[in-house]
Image 1 (tube, rainbow, N blue to C red):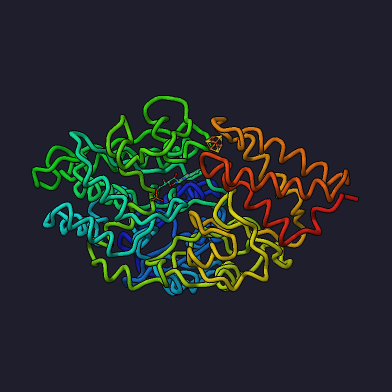
Image 2: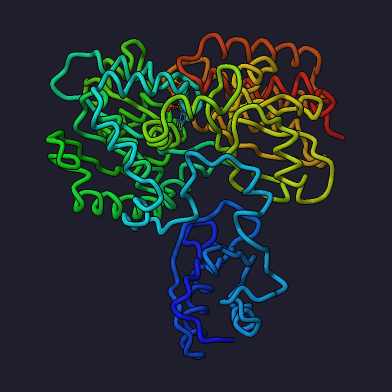
Length: 516
Ligand SMILES: Cc1cc2nc3c(=O)[nH]c(=O)nc-3n(C[C@H](O)[C@H](O)[C@H](O)COP(=O)(O)O)c2cc1C
Ligand code: SF4
């Protein structure tokens, strides 16, 4: 092989890749290159989101990136022997990264740079289209920025799918000396990691999105409330914020515009309910995370009683592309009232788990089988919990439902934050129903009775059903209890915990018979 001249080798630094040994692989590559006297640069990029192949390394050859994975440190000498720096054949060679079907079949808008760039290189970010959205936003009035977001059809990706532009408009029109932008990065839903991927792999896109939000509504201070279990995301964000500040993209005069925007990271309190926006605001104010009564909405009276945008990471990270490419471009993806793309996270018992960004409209079946490759165990998929721990269990007869907020609502399910947790036919759905109530009992903030007491009673009733005590009467009682929790709970924790239970009652009733 001819001597390589500073070939770039990419080794993901994302938490998942690191948990699978990426740091050891990076060190082994640097060591081996040193021993062999081969100049190379190891770039710690984010993950491409093909988690079953992590650590998936890439090498840049002739302007293309070639992937190898999953790589262990012990594979590294063999990779050098096979001249992987020149794209040599190796048992773990996967081909051109962009041509891998899992990636080429996606429409990456929000995640366009994830896995491509060095997360902390502003230069890399800008070379890949970063800060173009902000540049356009700076030429517009606040109202015009809000209009662009409204016209794009973007709806909140945190769970409730509320139109982002309408929320921003309320904050824009609220009179106040101080307004805030708060990013909800508590990411508590089971099987979800899209927020983390953005924060660890492309933090500047979130910073840019929040800056545009601040300019749009006249907010000069933002906070990112990050799940405490994400230490790397917290570190990466803090470093990226500092880099953006040093480069003049944050501070008293954003990009020399004379308009101020500052940003800080706050570590979350470690409770599921702290992801609920009013609870989050209480927690940000230094109090215990308890749900607030509504009205007033946070958009009117939010953080410290001031008008506040609260948006999910993915919602905010989708704003730069809207301002860069235009509302029409974003809106052209999707179906019905579900516009743009959705970051689906395939998790649980799935062969090819990872991040899939596609336009709304793809069916669950396509995600589970075309992308996911079926269950990891090879057994039939029996159920998928969509939308987190408060989401329904979707039955295989419903797998042709398109990803579309309204289509999911029609079958009593929700897309939520886009997490899909897959179960094969060995799952005990009675146990899953019990878990939904138990989860609610443990995570309840305790403010209202239907949730605080109802969830505990729910566990007891399910236990009675499963042990054969007056099954019919207790099944009727369970349905009644679900109705009471739905109608009487103050927030969606108690109000939606019955949904997974009812999906088991309706679609998997055989599992609520007494256990043998
Ligand atoms: C119990 C509960 C937990 C929630 N957890 C999260 C969360 O972890 N992340 C998130 O973005 N939204 C979460 N939400 C939704 C938020 O209350 C809120 O709707 C969202 O942050 C608004 O942002 P969006 O419009 O961009 O989706 C949760 C809601 C409830 C009821
Ligand atoms: S539903 Fe549960 S979590 Fe929500 S306010 Fe009531 S007690 Fe708190």
